[in-house]
Length: 68
Image (cartoon, rainbow, N blue to C red; front, side):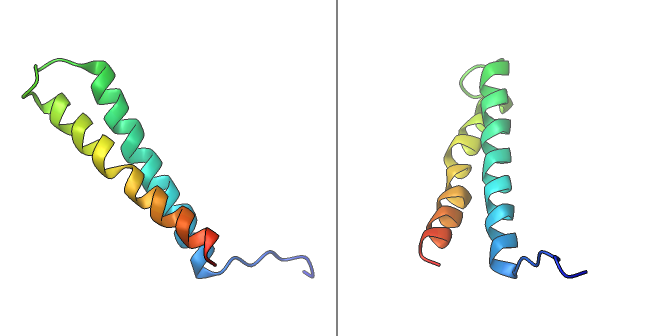
């Protein structure tokens, strides 16, 4: 096939990092909306970690795309 599309490892990593960061953010947001458990509950802890850790892989992936 002449029109094969080949993505190198960097593009695959960008997509993986974006998906991982988005997934962590969505899980954190859903736990925040679910609520329950008070300020020290399990839902609050998961929401906090999702909000703190979710944007990091997205930022790394976006910066890697910009500087490529």
